[in-house]
Amino acid sequence: MNLKYKVNAVIPAGGTSSRFGTKNKLLEKINGKEVIKYTVDAFECSEIDKIIVCANIAIKDELEHIFRNYKKTEIIRGGATRQDSVFNGLKACECDYVLIHDAARPMISTDLINRTIETVIDKKAVTVVTKTIDTIKEVKDGKIIKTVDRSRLYNTQTPQAFEYNLIKHAHEKLQGQNFTDDAGMLEKLKKDVYILDGSYKNIKITTLNDIDIAKIYLS
Image (cartoon, rainbow, N blue to C red; front, side, top):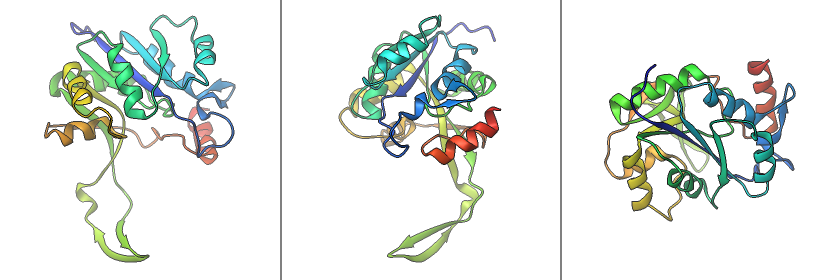
């Protein structure tokens, strides 16, 4: 891929891993390698020009040590929320397009990253998704109200990718709120966001059980 555009990646890593246990999940090792290192390595091997990791202050020094020899990667301080962390990362970008990816999704492939880059240059705003395969029920007070038509339902993953000025404007306009999904910010502003088929392996590590699944995929 010969890009005439500059593309950066923002990887928010500012969470406290409250649902994971006593250790920060990003530093948990799978086959001797930290979760976040799998994530960053996939981006280092991609067509991305610069990677900005927005770190929780408690692990910032350790991440700087882990990635000290990485040519593309820069560690900066994250924010109090995911939205704050991403905004910090956007302000550190120098690019035409930006990919935003959860640090806790280590099964991301370089191929999917590069396909996301190709798609965002065409579409301006894109999120990686998987088709919902489970039957979904709407529930109220412990009772099923209805079965939701799953033919139009998708599970959102990351990376999400945007024309840089488009997503930076959204963050400026919606600053101080608590969006957990950058595509949702553009939806709020009535902007079009397109989908790109992802992988069911591209799970987000939240609990210790997810580590067991990741060990299988990453072995």
